[in-house]
Length: 243
Length: 308
Image (cartoon, rainbow over all chains, first blue to last red; front, side, top):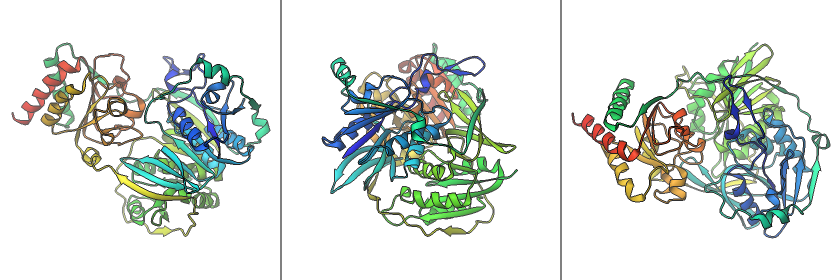
């Protein structure tokens, strides 16, 4: 089954720089693979069972990430809109998938960096979609998909083509070495632009401003003297009525 | 201008908060429920103006109604659609957003009307900052604001929407992790992170939990990498989300995936030796200190408060 894996479609919010006036900047920060991207890639490689895995990404960063993990080729939407307009990012990704034929499943990391892109991709494709996926394997011509739902684990059958948003439950185990990365850079990369995809939107989004949340800062207690620190904490918890 | 809104409901998580948020736009608020009829009935008692229910047949997950719900959304064209970040809700929201050609924004904390536009406040940069975004046209938002208890007046009638679920998605099995039940309803929880150095040291945590009358929980790496706890003890966005009165986080750095699981805790206390730990920006009380020194003293203090 031909599988598309979407990777490196957001920047890590941890890398955002917040200045004293709450302004956000991203000095030198590129789109990055989230913790969930390797999990999506791993399931994709297993599902493909020797068929083609195509990496799909946006922006102008290093495109070898999926290729180094087994993707035969990579498609890049070089100017897909990002950040504020997540629906447009999702729409561009969906349109890029539609250009390909014979795709059985699209896998994307179900990353809390921006859940909106995941929703938009699934919605724009209009395929059956499951989020919070932790495993998937072929079963009787369909896919058996496992996902976490709160404190429960649920198994679903999914008849393709489907979108699976995969959530990682561990760190990547087999990180590719330099050899794989160098070989990956020789694999084909197709660059397309948003203009090629014709994804017009009927809405406009515009940032109006940023501010700090008005939640009170934590009360920090010096734990150098444990008895005093604990005494202060217990007193505070009593005042709050939680003990 | 009154703006009508939809709230997509697959469980009761944050349904009251979403209703509150949608009410700010002054229009009619519809609950769009995908699931069991009793869930729709509970929504009907919360104060929504109207409840639509895509009643799920046995073995059919909520996502199977995505196309049907999106079709109805396109007919009614609400300017606002909100959903929680539960996986099925996000899929339903994506379908509705596509049908409405709506902007899609995650981490939504609040919405407001500004003339013809909707201004959405979302958490950015890991919640350090709130960003206000003006949207012309329709807005679909993944709601991450506070929940609110709703005591609606008379319950409205539930309108069952006849709909095809398609055959593409079916539930094969659902296994609730029985061990998590206590954690989900506990009034007090002690959570453990990688700041604990060895498995044997868990006994000091268990003593504290016993003195507090608390359940124990852990972060994902403590379960998956260290294997000190079963997975039903993991608290975080991909596992259990808890809402105790008191959560004490011991040696937990405060990664977002863990903290989103305790967002509904009333009071969060963090004990960590690293004054720069992220959790100190995300708690009510923080003790900067060695948990190995703090925990025994805290245990004695809780024991004493229980038996004064």
